[in-house]
Length: 125
Image (cartoon, rainbow, N blue to C red; front, side, top):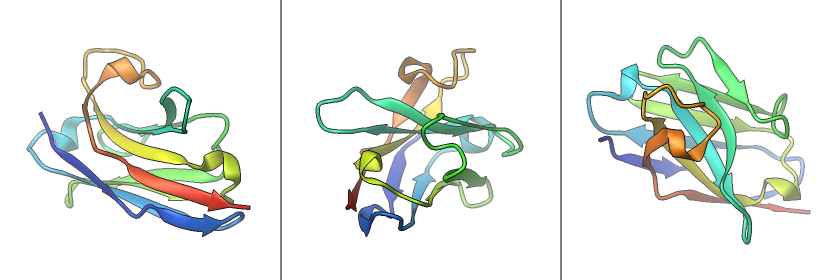
């Protein structure tokens, strides 16, 4: 297993930007697909973005494509989520997660076996 710690959340005005970071411990980080998910109050956790182990392939939810960018630095064991043009619908707790590597779809919560505790992002209108 790997331990994940998110940082960089906060309060931002609509149209603004934030960058989330997720620091990972453990030796398996560089060989793992990593993902970001979010959960708004009263809603299920939903997929936001994922990135391949080497960083060359990325996937995004339709709702964030063109506004969010996922990246990683394997030398620092860190994955990032740059969020631009934020709106009130982006308000949620954001979680980073490590894919279990069992062949499950990158978009499914059940495909990930390690989770951070989350970072709150609040967008004011």
